[in-house]
Structure formats: structure tokens, C-alpha cells
Amino acid sequence: MKTHTTLLLTPLILLAALMAACKPSGSSDSAAAGSGSAAAAPNPYAVAANAAIGKEVELTANDQMKFNLEFFDVEAGQVVRLTLKNVGSMPKMSMGHNLVILVDNVDEQAFVEAAMNAPVTDYVPADMASSVIAHTKLLGPGESDSITFKAPTKKGRYTFICSFPGHFQVGMKGFMVVR
Ligand SMILES: [Cu+2]
Image (cartoon, rainbow, N blue to C red):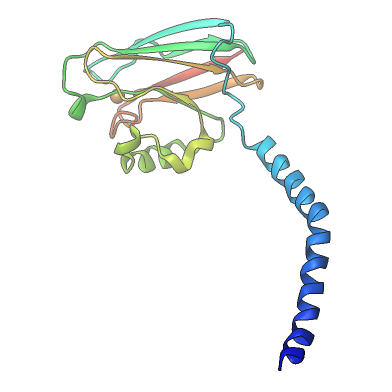
């Protein structure tokens, strides 16, 4: 019985030894593939905390569901620091505001519809992160938030919106113009 078990186990041990021998190349292949996909994954608009600011932009949002600016300009690839202040007085629950800058070719209507179901993430749907260049927090009255990001390298108009339910629909949006 003992001999029989050994005979059975020997091929398994050999197989395990073969797999172990193959593992270094196999794992380095998968590591290479992993770093390849990891290289694509980082947010191209993210900047280091100590990055030099190329452009400061300040916007306000109010109880009339308006931003004070319909557009602002940045240069391609510039590090932008954007501050949004909610200058209204109505409660955050009913009149919160954020500012979400979208990449181009985003279905804005689909985005805001998904946003309605994302109150826990400040109405920025987590599964649509790839559609977002940058966004502020959701702000109550008197609150402000600053975000720093790298402007797209592709020139053009990029829509920014407030994704609080209903606000985009009444025109709470504008453009970041990349020159
Ligand atoms: Cu709003």
C-alpha cells in the first residue's frame, strides 16, 4: 500500500516541481502584464501634491442653481487649482453643489442620471470615474473646496456640471476651455 501511494504521488511531485520551475517566467509575464495595465490605469489628470500651480480658478455656486462663470480657460497640460465656493444659504440636503469636469465624449445626460443614484459619493458615480477629469466635494452653504488637476493635453471644450440632482437640467453647467 505504501509503495502504491508513493508511485501515485511521484508524478504529482514531479508535476509540482515542474510548475515551480516554470513559475519564475510565468510570474514575471503576469507581472509585466500587470504593470502594463497599471500604466494605463493611473488618472492622467492627477498631479503630485507639491506640483507647481500654473493656473488658479475660482468659481461660486448659489441658491439660484448658477455658477458665476459659464466658462474658464486653461492651457493644455497646465496644472490647475480650482476652488468652488457655495455662496448660497439653503441646506446642503436640498441645495448642495459640486463641480464635476467631464472628459470629452461623455453622455452628459447618462452621467447625471447615474449621479442621482450616487448620493454617498457626493453624486459622482464611482463606476464612472473614467468620465471625470476632476471634481469637488458636495458643498453646503458657505463651504468651499479646492481641487488640483492637470488639464487635458487635447485642446477643446470640456463640460463642467453640478451633479446634484436636477441642477444640470436647469443649466448648472459650463465649459473649461483648453487652449
Ligand atoms: Cu448645484
